[in-house]
Image 1: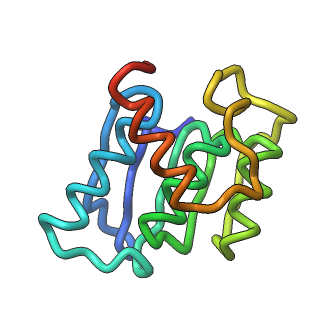
Image 2 (image 1 turned 30 degrees about the vertical axis):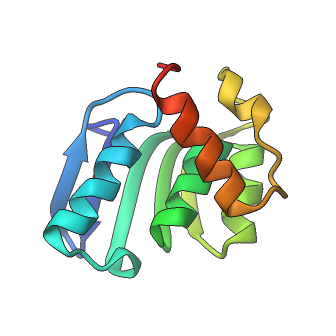
Length: 124
């Protein structure tokens, strides 16, 4: 089991982690990348649960490497679409999250991120 909801490594050094819920750790990571001037392509993200929403945000952030504790089929489709390398512990058909159902894996990245930002204020 992963120690945090989200952990981010540069090589073997943990440069960020969060125990927040839903997609909030990825929004926190977005701020950390900007504040610390981290190069997203050099980072490896470890995320406990990755569905379509997480996958779209990871693509938006420019992340290239991911390890998921649990990965949904829709999340994997989005990651493949954007060329993000992924490993996982468990793969499932779907995760129990309304956001997963709202996102079409083929939708434009900007549209998905806009939808996720809108939901971030109301969905936990």
